[in-house]
Length: 361
Ligand code: SAH
Image 1 (cartoon, rainbow, N blue to C red):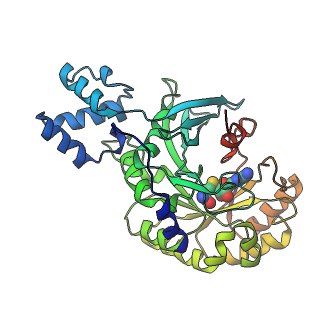
Image 2 (image 1 turned 90 degrees about the horizontal axis):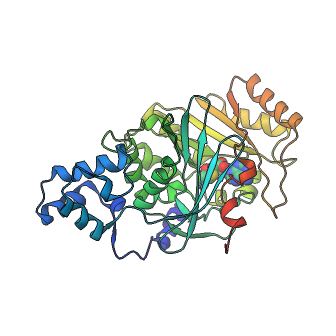
Image 3 (image 1 turned 60 degrees about the vertical axis):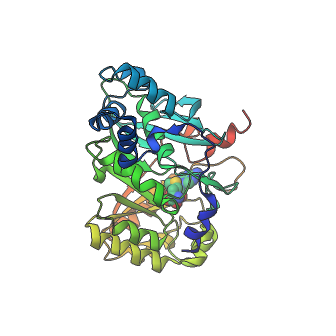
């Protein structure tokens, strides 16, 4: 709760004079058309061009009158970010470093599977206030929340990288920042991502990963949406979690699990618990046993993530034996467990790493 309130200081101020088209709600955009004297269906036409037909400029919207196109171009930006860096790894993962209108930089990633389905991983804040000790995103704290338009723009920038034969099928909100500390901007963006008039990605294929903010989890549950919730647990008890995820001191695991249970009750969607395995810190057999004990009886999925080392931080990847032992103990208790080997390690695709490695470029 304290965390969510603290983020009010980080209201976006993007320094844009011309309006950002992706920032306009349907009502606002229609009001602009009403004022401009155009028929209202034009608003939906522009949206279709942007979200479904992949237009990257008003001049491509050829069934709009020329005068309207030029007025739109005078009054709205479609793109407010600039691609500073685009990296591609051997597994075809691509990572973009985007510079926003106010000079701030964020990262977002495109992941590919072998069925030509693509997942975009997006950020919700510049930096992060949660302070997880092993994560690169929060090393310099949080600068500001992203706006709804900036969040949507990440998805559209990544979609431009797709080949004709590829399809954008999933969104994971697992980039920089704490999504539930910026819910007011994230929800309208995901609404558009999931609506048939927008990107048409099924809400069930959209995952929101959170450090675990109970009030915000309940707010999300009350939205009557089908987003998949992933909670970053990383430890089976408060003593260890307080050390790894300092924001836990104000919250506690029990309150998080209770909120996640409520999310399942409200949505019927099984919650995923993410657990970053850190060498010799939280990867012992005893940790696995205690994790199994606290998740017992819960309809949970466990996602184990072997740590992806961050330059300058004293944490290591667990040994394959430790990982295998951890998995086996959890599975013995009947839990569904996945090991997520991070894609794109060599392009510094883990949260916040590229931004740091290119700071000042
Ligand atoms: N604030 C959200 C999103 C963070 S990024 C959250 O806490 O869930 C998504 C996941 O990647 C989180 O579980 C985060 O703890 C984890 N993560 C961060 N840095 C990592 C690293 N270097 N290696 C492996 N996982 C990492």
